[in-house]
Image 1 (tube, rainbow, N blue to C red):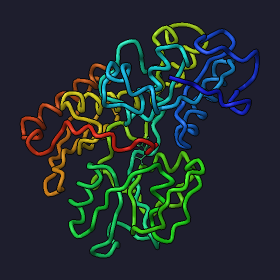
Image 2 (image 1 turned 120 degrees about the vertical axis):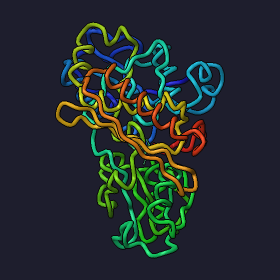
Image 3 (image 1 turned 60 degrees about the horizontal axis):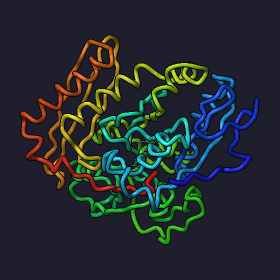
Image 4 (image 1 turned 60 degrees about the vertical axis):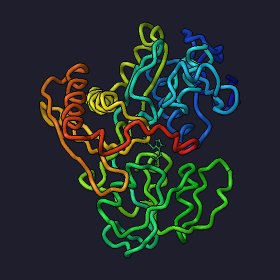
Length: 358
Ligand SMILES: NCc1[nH]cc(CCC(=O)O)c1CC(=O)O
């Protein structure tokens, strides 16, 4: 594991000396981030909020995900969240005090020794169609090519529009946007050329990532969750740390203040469903929970990979606590399993579809 300081521009509010790595000190804290534009943007936003709330300074360190991290520590942390794993190793080793993840990229089971201390208020949960010429799912011509690397998006696209051609694509947000015909490549890929001219009619991406990067102008349609149920945790962030960091002190108070209870309940239900289904991170499963009045409503869809079958069910709970939310997720998973979810899809699919999809 290696960390690399990001230089003076990575230093936050600056009241007090720069903190040393691993010391969630009285004076400051160290925040780990992956290197992609989306990771840096969302990490900076959260770090600024924590600094403002706590009065502490912070420093960003870039945690490299290549190389040495593919050995021992990864297997201890579980294979699913390989891209979160490097940050987690850094947290456990004291290389940073806080790490910010896209919640949907985290495995559904929390590793020992780390806690999710805050789930900030969720932003737009929907998937977004970014098409040439302002086209929408309804107006794309028959045979149009739509790029996605996600089996969940592919299956739901096929279910909605069997006449489209789904193309498997990879890469970070800027790279994928650049695949759309006539689209100027977005300058968010850290200067890494994507090597493609626009060759597709459309791509599907998470609205949240586009919004956080200020790229929402590329969206031609926000896909209704009735058509495209988002990934569990989509649009949410997880602020992770060692338990003692969240237990006491100025940073603990700031973490608690950043936590949004309704978001916490929703993502808890979605992740509990995923855990009970024993589904891998690229399984074709959509899940979305919302607090509606005094109820938590969870919807989930398990798709066959070819999109010919989508099993979609919902469950409601009235116990608005974390354990109540877990129960809603688990019960809906049981219901889906009882109706043949495991036969419908290869739930354990655990291909890391998105090395820098972040
Ligand atoms: N798997 C990559 C990833 N992880 C989080 C986001 C977007 C932001 C979010 O959903 O919180 C993305 C990009 C995408 O799916 O388009």
